[in-house]
Amino acid sequence: MFSTKFVTILAASALLGSISAFAQTAAPTPAAPAARAPAAGAQATRPAGAAPRRPIGAAAQGGAAGAATDVQNFGDWTVRCFNVKTAAPCDMIQIAVNKEKKQRVSSVSLAYVPSRDSYAAQVIVPLGVSFQSGLTLAAGDKKIEGLKFRRCEGDGCYVETGLAKNAVEQLQYGGNTGSIMVALYRSNKPISLPMSMNGFVQAASKLKELARAKAVTPAPPASAAPAPAAAPPAAPAPQQ
Image (cartoon, rainbow, N blue to C red; front, top):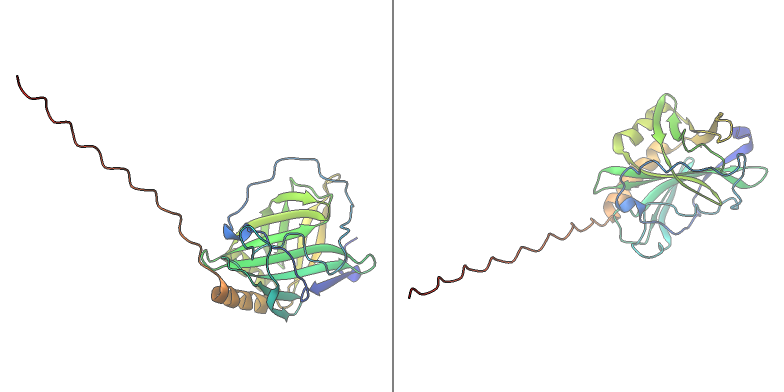
């Protein structure tokens, strides 16, 4: 169903999209509440080449991201930055598209957050997956396991979570063949979606370079106002 024979891997050099504020926190998200997933086998209907609905990493708080800048291809990955002032203005993205139906099979986006020295990830897969089984990113014998789905929309099911730097960078040692592993909701049958690691190392290096140059360090939370000074004790009543 998702053999690489029938899938084209796109370096998304021309993609633009609105960016959520997710990477501002980049903390791992809790498991999504148990819910009935959409019917197994449902396909995304977004046209090939369209941006993921809410790519992560570069969101301006309270508004849509500006146009992509510094767009560079590295093998099957694209690094892109957006004209916004946030803690993570850049991401690296790859999209797999069904050759026959011209529909997106999967999308992987990683944003580097310099202020936390960690990553924020968004992975989109087709509808009909098992929330309980979660999602695994793999390259050879290197794996990031136990990623929890956050939500499903009309175009697919989303994992959105923070990832430790070491976990992401271990993937570069797994070779050029990667995969996104999920299970189907109705049968719990595991399936593997394609993910090319070609250009991953170079893209990750450029992503960190650009993010460090363009990121805006988030302001520290305002400290609590000092408590008002205690009123001086009342003067003792005069003696009679």
